[in-house]
Amino acid sequence: MAREFNGKIELDIRDSEPDWGPYAAPQARPDAPNVLYLVWDDVGIATWDCFGGLVEMPTMSRIAERGVRLSQFHTTALCSPTRASLLTGRNATTVGMAVVEEFTEGFPGINGRIPNDTALISEVLAEQGYSTYCVGKWHLTPLEESNLAATRRNWPLSRGFDRFYGFMGGETDQWYPELVYDAHPVEAPATPEEGYHFSKDMADKTIEFIRDSTMVAPEKPWFSYVCPGAGHAPHHVFKEWSDRYAGTFDMGYERYREIVLENQKRMGIVPAETELSPINPYSDVTGPQGQAWPEQDTVRPWDSLNDEEKRLFARMAEVFAGFLSYTDAQIGRILDYLEESGQLDNTIIVVINDNGASGEGGPNGSVNEAKFFNGYIDTVEESMRFFDELGGPTTYNHYPIG
Image (cartoon, rainbow, N blue to C red; front, side):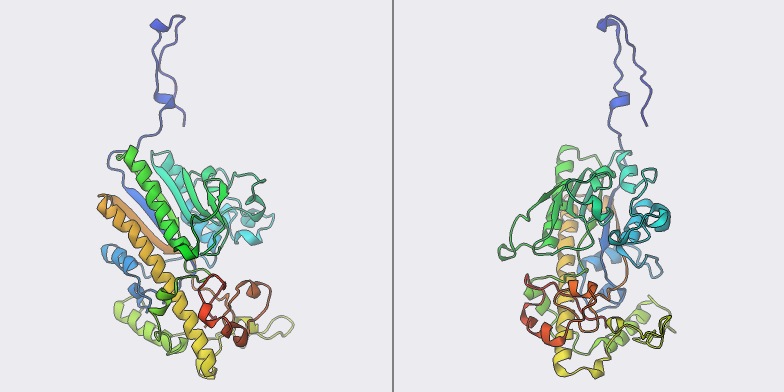
């Protein structure tokens, strides 16, 4: 809010007194902490080792061990609504974000535009003297406003962020991402052959933004909203990271659920009397015209699979796990930088996932997730042709729904 001018204006400049107060940038209080939000994508509670899963996440464990690990926490079932709620502190339906940006309609709760009179935390902190950065997935701008000819009123730089580097929509290729730098599109700085991956690029930019500010104004606090593409499809990662999990998931997803549930009971994450739900809890449900439950949303029992199918499904899980662990390592570089620069102990870190695990791979998994959105179920034969390329630049892969 603008402050009243308290200087003096006379006909002669020598008799006038300036007042810079109304024009000065906001100043944070001396003890203001830095704030780092880490928002993962499509990762279920049974995934990370710090929640009883079998995917090794040393950076997330490092954060959990120094903080509070919540076993009861609410997110929505979709990307955009959760992100809108996190940034505004309000129910997504009250800020026009009850659906993802790809399915907006002209109604108050689902128009996909956070009202200007609804403040984002980035806007609030900017007014309190913070530097503010958004890196990674945005997914809070309608499709029709995400092009270069459209208004940028719902882009990050119009909603309180000083800098932005990432992608506007719900997902992007991790090898060849559709990048936006501040308010204009850019090419990735390197190729996969040169070692490029978006998770690494994201960490580099986060460190760069923080370093740029602290070198000039080390006393100025910052807010960084960091949203990796992981674990949303496509599950892209270097082969050596997937290979770390060779054989880990050969027991099948039904046995995996049992192992993780026992781990979670032992860790106190779920009550001791917790039981697993059926793998297909709605298989007997029919539609209004008697339609059967969609095959596209049905888990195939592990013991019904042949050896080739089991091998494929296990490999898709290995790729997904490698993707998460690789991204965890990149976030670890951010924490290492903060520790080395003496900022870690003055930084509040909040880690969430925007929703549960994704079912967009269908019953057989997919080497091209776009097929799912067109109602097409991949066959195992199709996917096996790309078995050795899973996670690489020639696939857009997603594990099976199980």
